[in-house]
Image 1 (cartoon, rainbow, N blue to C red):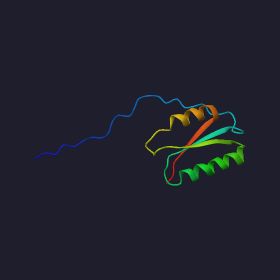
Image 2 (cartoon, rainbow, N blue to C red; image 1 turned 180 degrees about the vertical axis):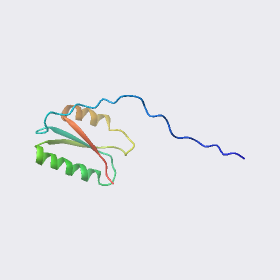
Image 3 (cartoon, rainbow, N blue to C red; image 1 turned 45 degrees about the vertical axis):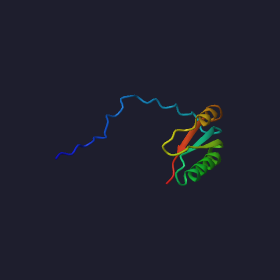
Image 4 (cartoon, helix red, strand yellow; image 1 turned 180 degrees about the horizontal axis):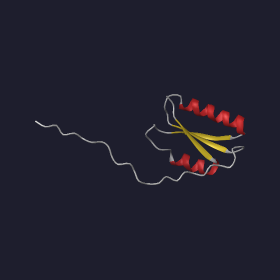
Length: 94
């Protein structure tokens, strides 16, 4: 009798990731927030937004809630953030 094993590992992707350029300054920027529905993720991001507003006079332009941690950000939220936000922070809870 033999047992067949499944190897779930795959090779790492060989693509290069291009990061967005960092802003020259933080003062007065507009930030969007994305939370992933985990416990307290909205609380964490709300606090981050408040701190950024206090320290850098940033404006929180909205918070989007994903369907679940495994889902991507809603296309409508992406469109809104592209026009209203200078950058977006995604956060998790737990």
